[in-house]
Length: 164
Image (cartoon, rainbow, N blue to C red; front, side):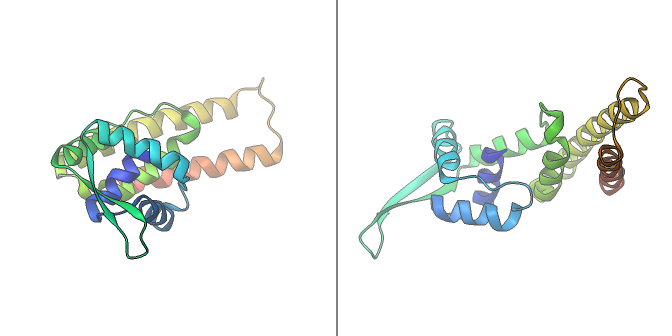
């Protein structure tokens, strides 16, 4: 998800690594707050894929800085990975879907439809698994666990409604 957020930020701004970190924290603080130690290798990977490029210069304070920008290939790559996002970890589905909805403004209508269909399918699968777990007499949830799980069910329903 860090690479997606970096590319999304770079569709809006040319930025140094520090500005990228700050913008991700400002816009996505509820969902993600990657460290510079996470952003730097992601930028290097994106650079090796020709998704981003940078300009080196000396700052007024005499420091060497790199200002990153997204390439045309990077924009196509970003749209591709957003619209066909692979949900790999059930524990992150709600978070990932929230981020994907927030950044879907860069997609064309057909790409948005593909993304939203993918999100709804994954939410429906997750909802079915949660309901099944709640109804399973061999899984003993305490009251607080049931409350949290039901809150997640409400979130799933809300997201499905938002997407449709």
